[in-house]
Length: 111
Length: 113
Image (cartoon, rainbow over all chains, first blue to last red; front, side, top):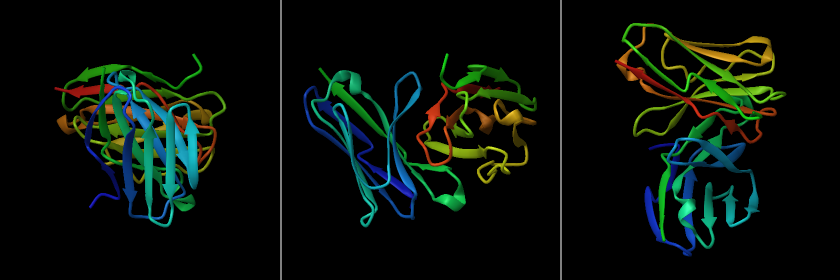
């Protein structure tokens, strides 16, 4: 069992739909990251959070430390949101800031 | 530019050769990370540098892999006696300090023939 599991692996949506991507982890963490990887390969950090909820534009990330679960929501999805979304966890102070990654969720938003 | 810069962007080499991959982090970032993404696979951690502390090398897959960071800035990842399974995209990231958002370079696509 991977330490970080994402669901779904693939997601296809119509433009305008509300999208949720889930991430579960099995170890204690210092922080959880959501990353976006575009078809060209470039990776962008979307959120880093250790509790509660963060919002940036149409993106919302939440985390429940007790349940070891995080969700990434996209409101009013758009074709330009099509990308791979990756959840990653930082394992704590004694392990530095090394990240352990989920397998990613391939999101396709159709016009 | 102000982002993380990696070179070369693509490298094709023959099995058994040594390769060096370079990463220029964002100026002032004390933490630097190397990751690898093999075809169809997720990202995996290789090595982490934080300031002048000893690096965390726990992700390096074999003793053919090594990395250094000179002067707290530029880092070089070296792979000796390359094997076909080393083919992957090697990504570098930096952050202001540990446990802060990481900024990724565009990666070096390494192909071993």
